[in-house]
Image (tube, rainbow, N blue to C red; front, side, top):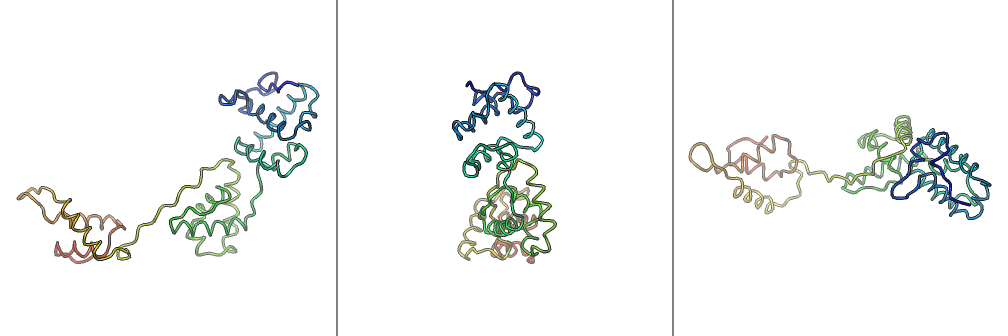
Length: 249
C-alpha cells in the first residue's frame, strides 16, 4: 500500500497538520502515520484497507489534535510513550493520553520545592517537566520555601493546571548566581584591598579643576552602593568612605 496522501482530498486541507514540513518532505500526519507503521509492523496498516480509510484517520486525528491543543512536541512524546505502553496500535484517545501524561500535583510540588532550593545555590535543579518549573515561578520561590503544601495546595494546583494546559513551554533556564549582599562577601581582606587598588589605578579620570581626580575610585564605589550594587564588599565600602571622609551608609 502506498504512503498516505494527507494533503489532498481532505475536508480540512488547511490544517497545520497537513502542511508539508520542508525537512521531512511530507506533512506531520504523513510522518505520524509512517512512524506508527514502523512501531507496529503489519498491525498498523492492517487497519487501513484503502486510501479512504487513511484519509478518514488523518481527518479524525488531526481534528482531535487541534481540539485538544496537541503540539508536534506532544506527538513526539506520545510516540515514545506508546512504545512502552501499548503492544497494539493505540486509538486516538489512547494516543492523546500518551501525548499528555498526567502530572501528580503533590509529587510535582515537592519537585518544585527541591528545584527552587537548588536554584538558590546556583544550580539548575531537576525538573521532570518544564511546566512544573513555570508553575513554581508563578507561585514564587519565597512562598514555596516558607509555606507548606496544605497552605499552597489551591494556588499550586491551579498554577500547575494552567501551565500544563499551555501545551508548549519554554525550556527551564539556567539559574542565576546571586551576588552576596554588602557585608556578606566572602572576599578576604587581601582580595578586597587588591580590588580597591585596581579601581584606584583604572578609575582615575580628568576633573574640571586641576587634572586628575584621585578619589574617583572611591566615588565610583559609593555610586555603586547607592545603586544597590550587591557585589561590593564591606572593606571596599569602608575604604571608599575613609577616602572621602564620609560616614558609612
